[in-house]
Image 1 (cartoon, helix red, strand yellow):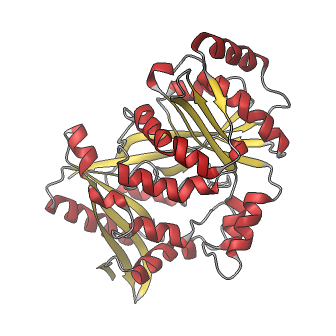
Image 2 (tube, helix red, strand yellow; image 1 turned 180 degrees about the vertical axis):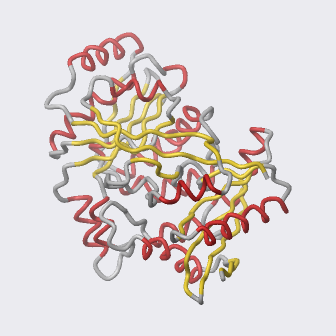
Length: 375
């Protein structure tokens, strides 16, 4: 018999909730664990500013006192108001290969969502787009990234069995870092610089980046992504939160900022060395030696770079700004010895984004999906 327990969002409970996933995938060579402390902060209403407009419930499934599954139910009122829909989300979902377990977990969230007046349940999604989203549906034998969900192949069959249908799909690509900047990129970059008066800024001080372009960077993301699927606009509190968390970690060589004649930010490319192997070695914990593996991942030799984010102001999209970004970044990729670049998830319908890889040798290696069911 399966017992479903609502999990109160205390720090100790959220650690157990997060660690269930890490234990489930123990020994899997393709799974990349999160940092437990990061996931706990995301799930903690006292830490995550997304709770200004979100609410959540957490459930775990037990059999004979042993945890066998977990799930979060989330309602993002900001997105619902923008879309004029009554959707709930499910996320942070993991379970053993047992239909009784997956059914009990989904029913718990469905019941909660119905009780809140929601009409549809979609997922896996997080609180906002900076959380992991999309269930893996292809590429199970590819090493994951720090920005993506990994799950066993049986998850998809469980969702379909419970009546969940395709809502949206994402594609992921791995690119070979070229020996030189593609000639067409260089030519387009020069044209764009002259035609629009754009230039690339490089910094050597993280504090200066934060002070001069920290807020502008996240406002640009809001502007560039506002029409994407289920996009949740970042608030000022969230922007402050993410500036403090992320900008201090960046290798500034791998950050490309494009500004116009007035110094207004119109394009950004953020990349960082792949942390996948380092996170695997850390097993989700900084202590006792996880910090060493993560530091080595940031500073040591690596053949792979993660393209975490590319954003271009709407008025400059399809005008060659991406060529300017990659003309700047590729020489640094070569400098650090990167051979491959991970795109991370892109909407399958987002032809603008996918077209930027046409001058690279690419392989579409992962596929993921969000599912939906009417309540």
